Image 1 (cartoon, helix red, strand yellow):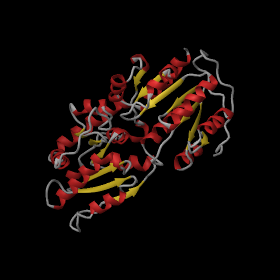
Image 2 (cartoon, helix red, strand yellow):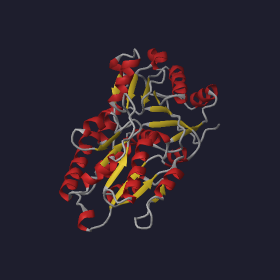
Image 3 (tube, helix red, strand yellow):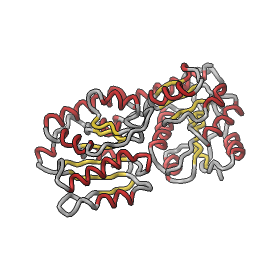
Image 4 (cartoon, one colour):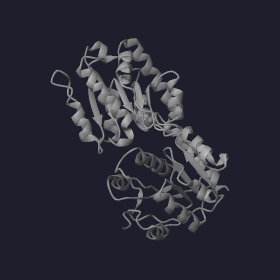
Length: 383
């Protein structure tokens, strides 16, 4: 364990200081997969802090995420989270901090200790359907952020945390990166080509609803059911080989499935804008909608289908299928029926595209969410 990039150590701002004062924010984050939505969430926090002249200090594992942070000029503390005492020593050596914004499990343990050491506010963000033993440290918790209302309701139902301390704050989408330049047209219809379908995200067991839907659609397409589609899988993970095997059902008479691995943000934005539909949960769904791409929400807890009409309300509540009180399994044929509905009319596709882009911009603009986060920081700092 070592310090990866030397922090520009500045004195922490006094509690209750003026709102334009620069802050040093300690952000410990623990994860299993090397890249994914959690890492992008933390990366966005560092972006807004840097833009506003604050100093984020992230504690995380060595690997591609730490490399990305370091390349962006973020101060990084490397650890495997195996020894909380050493993690505390590493963090305090690189303090002081004005605020701790932690993420669950091992990183939350370190964050609590650092907040106590410096006597600064402690904020925790919950990203999925768990409560992370919050009752055990409720008295030390200044603010609990949840990435959707469904997680807030879970915490309320299972813990005694005061409701006023729980604030749902969605992930957002960077409109400067993902928004389409204008109203998109149904090129699949005018060009008389197969519809392009993309999945963007981790290829892991927790995304099983999406993979069950995709494999089912491939099987049905191979038998002549539903529209002929050209598929693209963006991401990586332990289920990659399973998906590659499932794709073989589409023989030489069908467009080959493309597996790209992980791609950078700009390349992913291009894929969204080139796709005629996207399948995914959480942040992937948000970004594809911002690009004006009709989006099919399929997450860990539910397959919601096309995010359109009232389905948007459920997608908003449960992070596009990632969070729900009870877990539901995918129903065979659902994705094929959704694709048939979507691609049976160019006018319908263009209306879904237009509404998707407008709704994402109105409800999930990253700039607005960033401002809310910094406002919450200032609120807890004022005591």
